[in-house]
Amino acid sequence: MGDRRTSYRITDLATSERPRERLAQLGAKALSSAELVAILLRSGIAGKNVLQLSRELITDLGGLGGLHRASYEELCARKGIGPAKAAQLKAAIELGRRMAVPAPEERPTIQSPEDAAGLLLYEMGALEQEHLRVLLLDTRNRLMRTVEVYQGSLNASLVRVGEVLRDAVRSNAAAVIIAHNHPSGDPTPSPEDVALTRAVVEAGDLLDIEVLDHLVIGKGRFVSMKSRGLGFD
Image 1 (cartoon, rainbow, N blue to C red):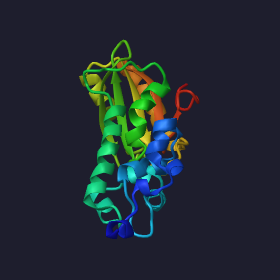
Image 2 (image 1 turned 60 degrees about the vertical axis):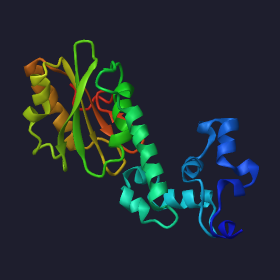
Image 3 (image 1 turned 120 degrees about the horizontal axis):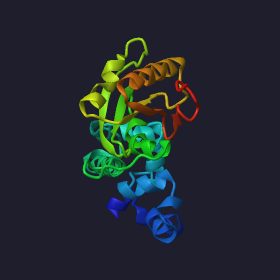
């Protein structure tokens, strides 16, 4: 009885409210984010069941993106989490990242902005600083590799276009897709983004490297600048 007074487990919830049972009956997609996190945490703390603990964790960290960005140490320091639960959360997040990012030997074919965003959105949407990455593609639009070019403030006047396309030249890539993130979560392209895109497209024409798109990544969403005609004349 002492253990039951100090923590609340999933089995303490009514059967109809238990996330594991709901997942088995309805599938994972039917569960809320808090319910999925509760399955990982398994137990709550005194006066707070695991679902309440999960909701509080997600809210305090600013949503799933904040949970994604939180360090192991930060999670360990939270009341009711500790090393074991922090490890479970970080392991689940890392598995999600590995599933979203293909292994080098897989070489997926990029046929649409959605294909490219699918390779980047999970990880880049959680970054706290701006990063500029370039997807190098062969003549069949198969991914050769992804390179990171810049980290920090991406002011168009400071970004050297030659560095953006340097690895494409060295790898003899036929085409590239540029992508950068907005840490604010809003993927709306800025005038600086448009200016950078135009400069890279013009340089690509001179180098015979086609710039297929420039994606702006936000939290859970993205904008294709090619689709909007921004920087592509």
